Image 1: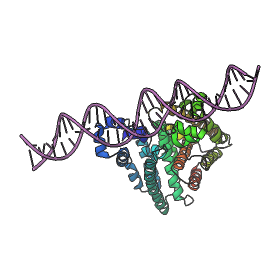
Image 2: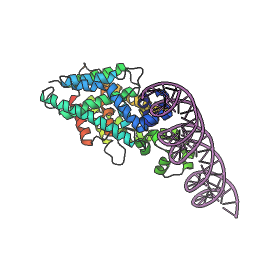
Image 3: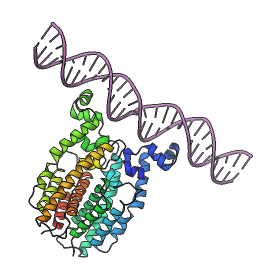
Image 4: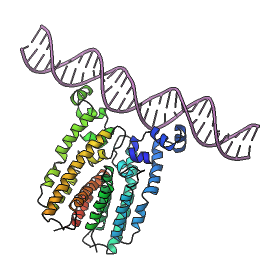
Length: 178
Length: 178
DNA sequence: TGATTTATGGAACGATCGGTATACCTAGGT
DNA sequence: ACCTAGGTATACCGATCGTTCCATAAATCA
């Protein structure tokens, strides 16, 4: 997972994957079929292990709490010294190298799924009166998504955790109250 | 430029570049040296042709006007049918494929340059009293940068111009007044 | 013990990559 | 008429890629 995360699908060579997994070439192909199939299973592991905070965030009681939890989870994902920086999803959703087409579609589809979950949550928050009616629920969700994606891009280019936290705090300062 | 933009450095093969440029292999190597040098010159063209709106944005009279111009320019960059979606800078700043190291450093360095320009502009805006003193100028700049990067990520994954505009409008709605 | 599964190391495959070298062509200047 | 500069087409180089195949060794189990 970390090899794909760090180097991207095309940049992760079979040899590098074998070394990291500690198995032989034949075993990999017998167990996973091919590289693309392996990546799909890896994405499942990534969502399960690394983006569980998204589920928790959606369960928060208010729009602000959702935003707080989502931003905090995004930053926490960048604090591990063992894991690569940035987002595995974003890296692959932007990869338009020839041959990466199926991979890109797959990853974008996963991203769309979570985006719509967030939109739905903000629609409910609007009904709860969590923010002023002058704000469109869907747009507010997309703005929050853009903010977390922006943080992940910044993290991937080497921005420090402290600066990420300040950025997130400022975004929350801008976040509309009821 | 569009070949690098669409496919990324590693994904842009020499053959594809030759076809797009309409020259022969020997001419390319005689004129540009190697692929990396060609890319550096392409990045210069990109900044000059496609990101001129950043300079204009920094010249706007208020923090809000800067944000408006920056967001508008970011979205306008995504409206061309001839150009690829997303940002050439972001795509390459996240590419950690082996051999892309020098390219990544170069692009990240360009991004840092513009980020600091934006920070400096927001510091001046703070002195002008463009927003409440409870907001930190640097963090506000980073938040704006995160928002534009988030928009570019969304655009790269196929988000429509209409939704990008609504997202930008909502962000501006959140933007602090004086 | 003997049979079966599952792993291994290693060779080989066709394809593609960035980059180089060679031979030929053509327009312009003196 | 001749030389030169800069273009093209084409073949080739070594390296790396994902993938397949094969003979063999280790572990599992009736």
